[in-house]
Figure 1 (tube, chains in turn brown, red):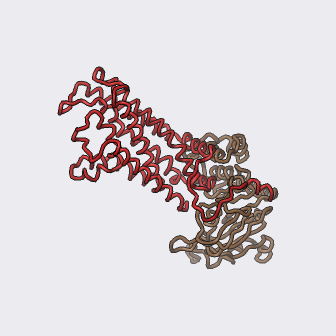
Figure 2 (tube, chains in turn cyan, blue):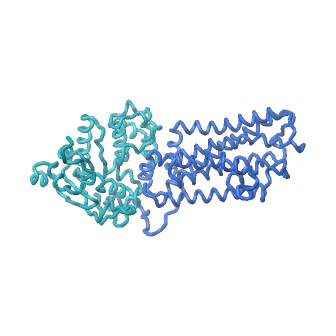
Figure 3 (tube, rainbow over the protein chains, first blue to last red):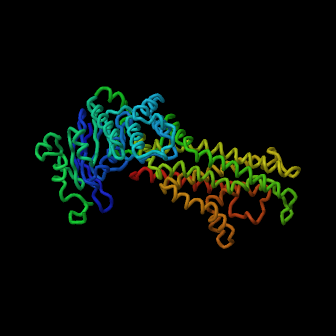
Length: 243
Length: 276
């Protein structure tokens, strides 16, 4: 369970998140949607206590993140697949993370196997493709067998096989009763993965609903998304005759 | 949520209380240890520290075996530690990689997600780094001493000669303190490039170059490395005008210690409040 309560985040002159309130419930995959710069990543960073909120709070299992004794056992997160030292091997990256929580070595091997990196485990991350980095980031997120999972754009750079794998993985985690929050710009993929949707724009909540409701009204998730975020897209390609 | 309550134990964080660095759990120090030893650059920079210290001591001592200094005095200890002016750069680079490398590679985010109590993270990093600095510095100081004295032949001194022990301890302390100064500065600057761009010129050109300009001496003598280096030079030639300072060798070490404390505390204050 993730509770976002009246969250505000301001960076100097810009307001990144503005009075945001919503809940993410266990047992579902919740899609977190919004244009670039709408505050999704900021919300996730505040949830993980990497950024301090200007006002408000985010609670995970009823606790502020920084009060969790063993955060990786409670919350697993993939924020940016690039957040790993390129000079380290995949195995060493997971080993140091595991050491912070006393997680046994065989769990590291197990995860490398299950995300499909067993053969590349002892190669340096510098030589990894974006898809391999995403797989490593997902392994890191799952290391502590957490009951809440936050994934920011996890399918970027993955091949079709990998996209399918992430979809099944997220659905599987939700079916086990975990809380899964995933952001993505790929509406057709979200339509296949998410049961619930939270859409934000310019740091504010636009809607908090189910996929069924949205698609019933607009035909497809993409149509619903475009309709809801119209006028909120800060970086938009011209609609005129360039093509 | 009975299981969660037991897991939380009595360790609920009291809101509004400042959370200071505390003694880290062994697992956290081990995690930092794994981080350090899983990078090739660590072995390279630490190896370069010892190689520079020993190699330069050997070269200098061997080429100066038959010299006398201008004023007729001969300081056999001088050659032991001269290499440290170069060796310190490698050790400082090691420390910058350990600290600022977290930011430059984005590792700081998983680091702080795993250890949201930033004081624990900072303490664990210090606890993992200091023993490596002490061990490397001791090897570099002893190695430099042994190499220089062996090369000086009959003019060399032994470790039991009065002043030798103090100089070796002083040289070790100097390397550890200057590296921890770099640790704090790197934590404040949060970037490998910025930390290298400020610390290397300061240690290599700025302080030593400017330190040799008589007009600037009253100020530059209080820079961290100039203050700390004194303990290695003054032994054996207390009146040598080339190393004249407004203070003695141990006072110099105290000045360097003060610089280091300020930098380490400054690093903590920055880490405590910045978004990553």
